[in-house]
Image (cartoon, rainbow, N blue to C red):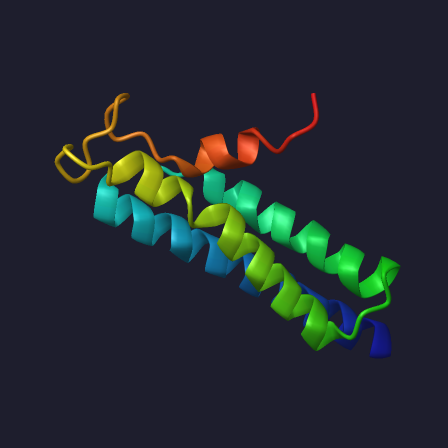
Length: 112
């Protein structure tokens, strides 16, 4: 019975994470009409960084979460204003059309 409860709790936890990511994709698609697959990469980068800070580096969970939020904010925030809101360009006009800049920001951080 204990194993069932453990599996149930873990399933609800993982399902909640998937639901939050799915809601984020839905909100962005509803607002822009474009799927931003860079969101999935940002979730993965945040998760891997969080596990690394918490388990490998031995930081407390709260400190690791704050570090992940700060790192994700600094990686995810600059592409938007740089690509979407350039001076002299109407809002939303990008060189490639309505291409979300989040994919490019995370693609540049991948190893070859």
